[in-house]
Amino acid sequence: MIGRRSFGLGAAALAYAGRLGAPRADAGQKVLRVVPQAEPQVFDPHQSGVNATQENAALIYDTLFSWDAEMAPRPQMVDSWQKSGDGRQYDFTLRPGLKFHDLSPVTARDIVATLRRLLVRDSQNQILAGLVSDIAAKDESSFTLRLKEPFAYTEFLLCGSNGVMGGIMRERDALTDPFKPISSRIGSGPFRFVEEEYQPGAKLVYEKFAEYIPRAEPASGFAGGKRALVDRVEWLIMPDAAVAYAALRRGEVDFLDAPPLDLLPTVAKDPNIVIGEVWPIETYAVLRFNSLWPPFDNVKARQAVAHAVSQQDYMSAAYGDPKYWRECYAFWVCGSRNGTEAGSEPYRKPDLEKARALLKESGYDGRPVVLIGGSDVLPYQRMSLITADLLQRIGIKVDMQLTDWGSVAARRAKKDPPAQGGWNLFHTSANGAQLASPLTSPSTITTCDGKNFPGWPCDQVEEDMRMQYIRETDPTKQAALLEAMHRRLWESLPYVPLGQFRQPFLWRSNVKDVVKANTVVYWNIAKT
Image (cartoon, rainbow, N blue to C red; front, side, top):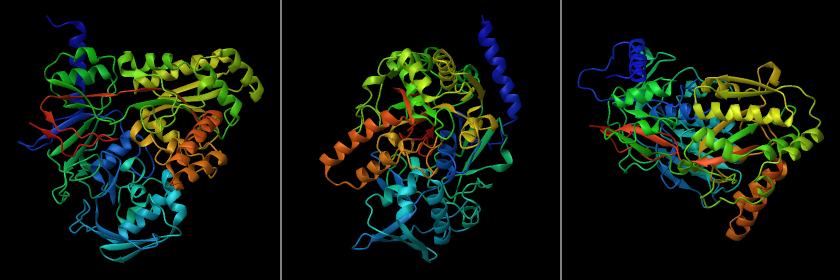
């Protein structure tokens, strides 16, 4: 007998199928059908670091260099390069045969325009941006990068934040105002975006780009040979997790990207489904403050919230089974070589009375704080509910505004006053590989120029220590700087760490060779 719940899920899945219309893939084509964590609202890889934007970037764009599985930069679009004896000039030559999806050749002019835009927009790359004295094309396939002083991480940062943000664009697209998203979705990567099949809110389609020439090396992280082993990748938007799980069980979809954990027991014993991991390091969840506007422009208000937090409450609500999560008070990820928790000791146990006292000292005037959150990403929704309750318990009025995560990701970039479309707080999570170092983590950049990650914390003392850490070559001195920076972060609190978790991914057993990387990539995945 078919249970009521199963029948309901089946009906819902059929409704989605009807909404998407008949598949347009040719007979015999291999199609990988994916339910993404969220639908991208921004497609410009230089504008947003959210997973959906970066997964789209990994499909359609290529980069000059890419991070391998060990986070080392490897050449990608670059064929060869030389560095001058004084370390101030780099001469790069592109791989032959590179083409954009409109079949125009990739030239050094495209590279130069893209890098100029990237160095304005990518918060992590402001270190390199400040050192660049000139970028110029030498001919159609080679270009020069000149620095004011030697810098050890040049190739690393040419990958862009998260390893894929450095996607190379056509010159005409890269000349778009860096603070406005580009309108096209044309790159030179292993898949092309199929505009005519794009159904916002329902379906995104990527086709194998026949003119793409993979590198010869084996795939490793974002680096190596990006081989499209399926003809199409289709993203099917299913906000209801139960519907997505049901579609996976029936073979209507092949892959669930970072699914909620509640329903894992329903597929745990299914021989046709693999419960696997993609992100190479544990992920952590955070509560991010907007440091531009009251009350969280005052450090005591931020400290008040931190003293009220119970990581166990957040992790239990958002991720359930303790086997998937742990408490962690490291800004650069527990378990990494930078995973110190120094300075966090006063915040290990909730202290509501201390929180209320600090809030009073901050001068909080009773105005509602705007808490934005993703209603379609269940962990974010649950953490938002906990935060709303916690804030009210220490005396803060809350205006909680839950929408789809794509809209939250776009809104969090706005610096408008909270009452005029801005925000005060939001929840997010990020895979730990990118966040495991003061060099790579955009979350702990505290420049006072407003170009850092949304929330825009300003702490020049911390930033000066970070720059000193990056330039330090003595491991002992670097370790001491790391601990001092970490203690300072627990004083200034650009955000509150909420714990660390392992995110399972789900795919059908006929899906093979899923690549481990900071962002889900769909090259080298085979479907039998």
